[in-house]
Amino acid sequence: MQAIALGFVLIILMGTVLLMLPASQKEGVSLPFHDALFTATSAVCITGLLTADLTETFTAFGQFVLGVLIQIGGLGITTIGLGFISMSGKRIRMRDRVLLREALNYPSMMGLQGLIKWVLLTTFVTEAAGAVLSFFVFVQDYPVWEALGISIFHSVSAFNNAGFDILEKGQSLSGYAENVPFCLLTAALAIAGGLGFFVIREMARGFLPRKWSIHTKVVLLMTVLLIAGGTLLLKLTDNISWNDAFFTSVATRTAGFSTYGIERFTGAGLLVIVMLMFIGAAPGSTSGGIKVTSFFILVRAVIAYPTGHSVTAFKRRISTQTVHSAFTILVIAIGVIFLSTFVMCLAEPEQPFLHLFFEALSAYTTVGFSMGVTPELGVIAKICLMLTMYAGRLGSLTIISIFARKQTQLADLPEGQLPVG
Image 1 (cartoon, rainbow, N blue to C red):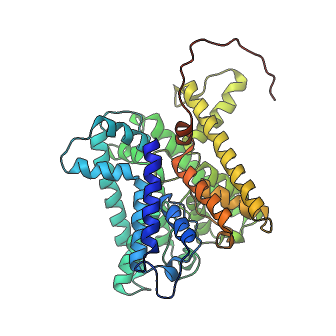
Image 2 (image 1 turned 180 degrees about the vertical axis):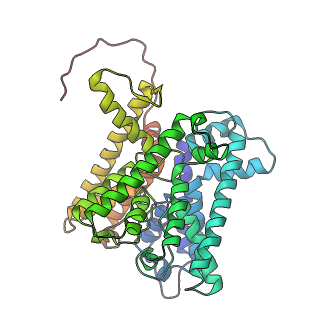
Image 3 (image 1 turned 90 degrees about the vertical axis):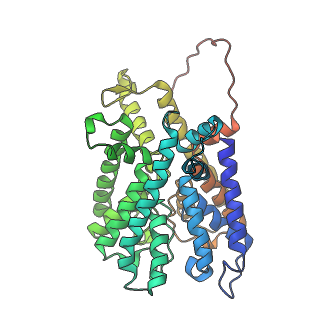
């Protein structure tokens, strides 16, 4: 886990250096180091929070660097590096297999070499298809070569749930809010990235739900419920179109694109968005949040424990260790978001609490939605957001494994009674 965490740091630093090059910045632009570092961190952590306008700040080369950082951040440096080694015909060492299993959050050591090839192939084929289809939209507003570059960047950003865009039509995708096919395409790319490679692979092997693993069943069930429920709630709370409600429901679960400005939502609508952001998408995907499987287990545990029943799903019992992990993930997520918000409130006392809380939540869940205050923040608050994005990309259990050392308990301690509730 330490190697994975260090790998992300190195890629962020390399990306920062590349973004600071004169070739990356447009003439007359002087990007401070901390803003370059913030942009690189946001790209590698596939978040989408920005302190500088991408179209006005970066050249085509700088935007290419950002696209590469997003791709590496989405797949992980371990997956990409070992993938190319595998495709060259060389065998992956056992130590590297363990590292890859941890990077992909894969439950088994079996079939890793075949899985990594499939992950890379699926990613590039999906992104290529998304770029081709997006091109027919962008070519109507941009010159051919510029439209091609925007299409590739958009497809990579959408599939990796990064929320970055290099458009000149206003905030995020608001200029294309009326283009329903394009919005559906972007949503499809984000959903595919959010499902996770294991789910996509299992579905590709055969559309026989009874043979799917419990992981796939839970991910698909929760994805449908959250998208449908989010769409209905957002339509209920705000006077927006069904297309905007659906797209926001999808993007809120870490894609980060928007067709309807976040600042325009009512308090009830923002509460729905906060809930969806916190939950996120699936493990082993390009998304953040506490993950739909953790949320599912938490709900099932709350229902089961008072009645004395085991936590179950699809006629299978969920292990106690898994339930404990889900509660640990919840507590750490709340703790990091609370700490980040607290630090920013101290550093930026003039900013509204809701805005700072929303930025901290968006950073940890790697969504990238913003209330518009990120560019206005001082250096301390920006550093706080960078650390929050980094923690969110690594995940709660990875954070624990880095700082906690396993110790063998030689004897059971006497049981104590402590009232709760």
